[in-house]
Structures are given as structure tokens and as C-alpha cells.
Length: 124
Image (cartoon, rainbow, N blue to C red; front, side, top):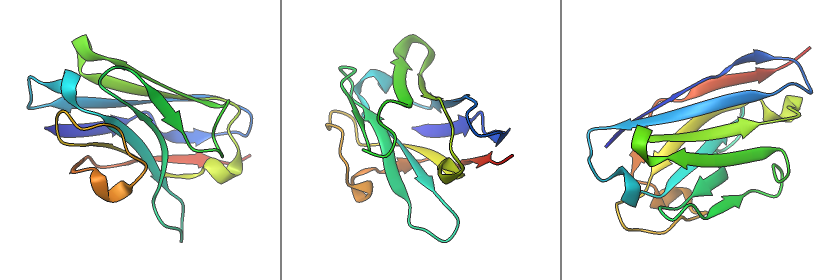
């Protein structure tokens, strides 16, 4: 499966952004757990959210209440809605998938398939 994240940009604090992750190359998208990760300048990549094949969701404590993840299997797409953006949300955002049939995980090393990231910059 190939993943492509998009939707990043320069936004002011307090605004919203919607990131999309589109999958291709697989007819089994329904079975993939998908995670969103971000990497801030000079920091390690961290998981921010994930969604299972059954639409169960998980969030990092730092983004709970501001980030919403969802998926549309008919469109092979996972969306990350980001509200009330903060400067600390700045970073490159990546989507990644586990192997089909596996549950979501908070461990970045469990995600096998990665796409190129999309840059989000939160600044006034």
C-alpha cells in the first residue's frame, strides 16, 4: 500500500486544518490500522492519533479534544481534523499503516508503510 498525506500549510494559531491521507495500491484498505505522526524540528517523531479498521480511535494526550481522526474506506482516505492550532503543533505530519489485520499501536515501529509527510506551520 502507498500512502500520501496532504493538506498542510501555514496557519495562524487558533485556526483549523484538515489533513488527508489517501491510500493506493491495495484493495484491502479496510483492514489497515492507520496512524498519524508528526515530527517537530529537532524532535523525534511522535504518534498523535490512530484509527483501527473498526474505526476505534486513539489520541496522544497533547492533542485530545483538538484533533479528530476519521476514515472513509470507500475513498481509501483517513482524515485528521486539527482545531485550535498551537505553535507546538508545527511539524511534518505523516500517515502510516500497520500490516493488514493488525490493531492500532502507539509504537511507531509497528507501522510498516509510510508516506511522505506534509508540513504544518503554525505561526502568526
